[in-house]
Length: 129
Image (tube, rainbow, N blue to C red; front, side, top):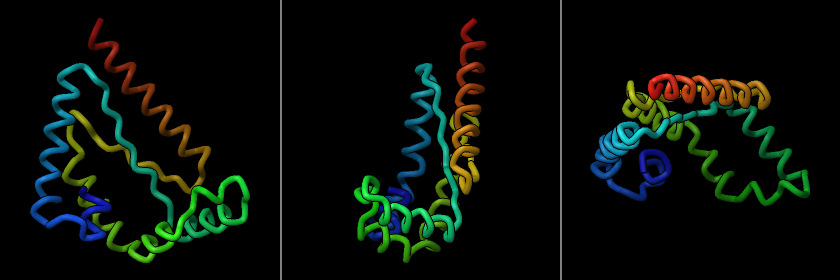
């Protein structure tokens, strides 16, 4: 709701603005029920995204991963970037923080995600003992 529906105009501003508090309330309930919430935003540059899109088109077994909608949405890069900034700002809480990952290098990004998950699970397990 706060990204695609907002940028594509599929819902009203009142709807996507309300969604921020709904997201925070839901994640708070999850955490209070003992669930470890780990949220990641993997950021790539516009240039890197273009390179990956082109590579997918050229790789037979990856072509299904790229659609005309991906190319159309890419034209709204700035609107999506603004929506992402708002989403992270409004839904990163002490209980359910966002982890922002520079993802130009896929292997490095994967390691950062795994390390973060390990730290969060370890922290949760320590609270239980």
